[in-house]
Image 1: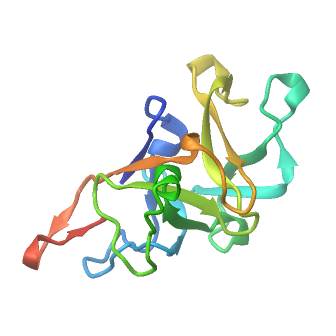
Image 2 (image 1 turned 90 degrees about the vertical axis):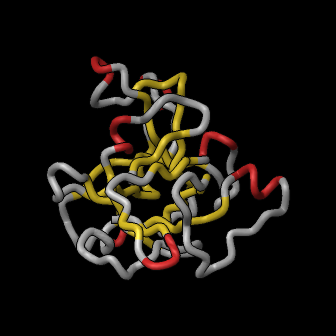
Image 3 (image 1 turned 180 degrees about the vertical axis):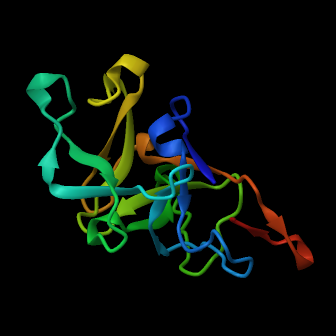
Length: 171
């Protein structure tokens, strides 16, 4: 699975992550309401995390929003993200019912479990550690999961396993 922000180009720092717990199982569905960890595909050792007590420096070229970074600790409680309906779906009153499988091509939001901030992308702020590569800042944004369209991500499935009844599963 890769994630593409609907408003901006592929975010390399986020695109290389995969939902953990599904890598070696063909019988697991990722569903609305699931709390997942996102693991770096190539290294298999970095987890996307956030911390409510850290913000990017607004005065030093950052957004001033909650930092999203990496951790190598498998048990890090700050590495859980909940799958929720997209911002657009909240406007149209479309709900992401708990237990409903997420399909390839779905638009979702990922809300940090510890802070209720959404995984958010910017086009006006460069990522603090990879500015030279032109990568944009990814942050935690919103209050209690309420944010904007820059919190929306498209699920782009790769290595999808098709089984009976052509159900889509993330691998």
